[in-house]
Image (cartoon, rainbow, N blue to C red):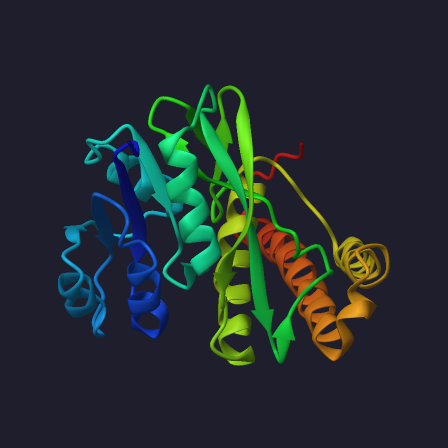
Length: 260
């Protein structure tokens, strides 16, 4: 007999792939959606699949998930992003795993992501093992905003099937996310006393490109791997350059600036 399980999804204007996401979770006993003020068809799609929709202003993924988990009554949870869905093979494998989980507190699954014109096989993006199926008492919620991380408290198994991920509708959306994520990350780093000048930002950005494109074999992903490495370099440059901008702003206003 399969263990009862709840799916948890955070949403905000996620109509692009939400139907596929929820359809792939139809094996779950309940679907909980925490929405942050969607104005597109997200809520209508959630209602179509019988999801229980909770409303909460956006404070970041970690506070949103903590809120969501207080509304979960089953012993097991599956989490997906609104731009992900379970492949048919993964769906079947999760059901089988929950029929006989043994002593595992949860399971890691692979994530396969599409970028530009293909599913990436390298670039540090595959296999992207994520702890996404777990007991409610078998995980810790960690990470640094804007990203969360689920960590097992004990023995964890692995399911060798894929979450299918379409992270960006187009390159313009990737740029918008870079702008949003770097602002959040830089603000947290600055509050912790991190500082970096323009030269340091350039060096770190160049290092990220080399790591992504050479050491993570991004060149084997063709032009998609090259573009991704460039955008990743931009992410790092922007994040560290924002630190310098914050330092200059505080210097101008006379606010003390402590260093780590």
